Length: 465
Ligand code: FES
Image 1 (cartoon, rainbow, N blue to C red):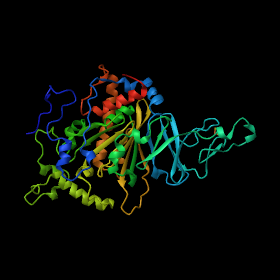
Image 2 (cartoon, helix red, strand yellow):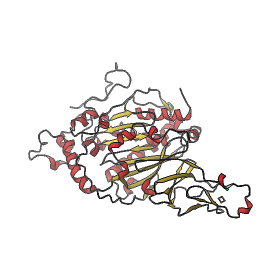
Image 3 (spheres, rainbow, N blue to C red):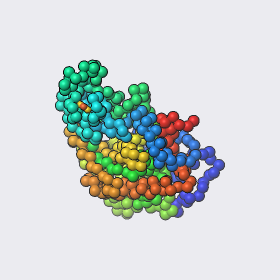
Image 4 (tube, rainbow, N blue to C red):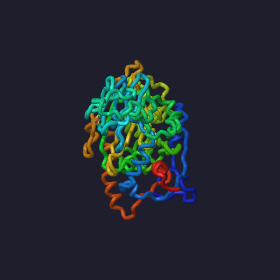
């Protein structure tokens, strides 16, 4: 028989110290005995309080406006991948709330971000969300003011009519740009900390996982019917797997997931695969877990696991072989956790990074208005050992009602999972607006990353203690 996780457990523990009975994520990764990177067995949790979070934080247009005025223009956000702008003159437009930036490669090893607004009468120089090639200069489509790729003024038609304009005052305004892991990051705040400092443990942990050596194999963008924070929160915890994604609990250690708070900007969960949910009162045998994950052929002739082997070890060995061939890379020294688990880092305010091999995703969330946001999902696949980088996948766009199952190449099982998450949001937004209690109550451990998100929002907005 399994555990009864509906009982309160030890109420004498200090808040935040209670954990799901059974093996922890760290125990499971150590038992793989395959030299997983030290970053994956590090644990960093901190109790951050247990007060309710008011729903007006998601529904109040004034709160949203404060976020626009004080948060989105002061934080590091990835604007594009370097592979989107490989040649000098290539550009993409990054839009977030009312802000619009032209991300442009103006030298082989240099990227700039110009404010996408003409200094004449404010016309957008490039269409929102567009990409292209600027050749030698950027030209406004209204009256033809133009700028060189370094941002200096190139030309004003009828220059005689603008004697009051000095060329040196008419360079295109720029915001800060830094490159990391193949991503182009921007920050509109001239006094923000460096990207390296802002990213806390990420540069150190990701020294194990070179994201610059990956390419975009799938890129999806979906409109979600919820405030950007509410939408993201569904991806900051695995607590909802039991009920929302109940199809997965035979093979995923949902309540054993590990949650880490590394600082103001970075948190993480690790959700193990190949280990049954502790919620199951009749958990499957290891042989059944292996079979559910497509590894029945790895059982011995007696139908049992080979002596001394776990389902995770057997599946990892299979993944090493099949994924090495499929991706044309050497995965011989990659651990089971990196191969199989859902390892998810969050970088405030809107980036999720999954460095694993079988689950190699990047998410980005951007607000559209107080009640809607964009959710992008990228699959970042290792570049083949030959070094030949495939071109980045084109973005596939989905509306609120569209299913992920319509995305070419998207795994059908995963598409179903994302559809389940999206359907929850429609009901959650409506329920939050109907609420008499007017606030949400979070779990101390499994939902700690959500609390940290809101604490950091408050810090940027200048709210609270
Ligand atoms: Fe751009 Fe006039 S608004 S040239």
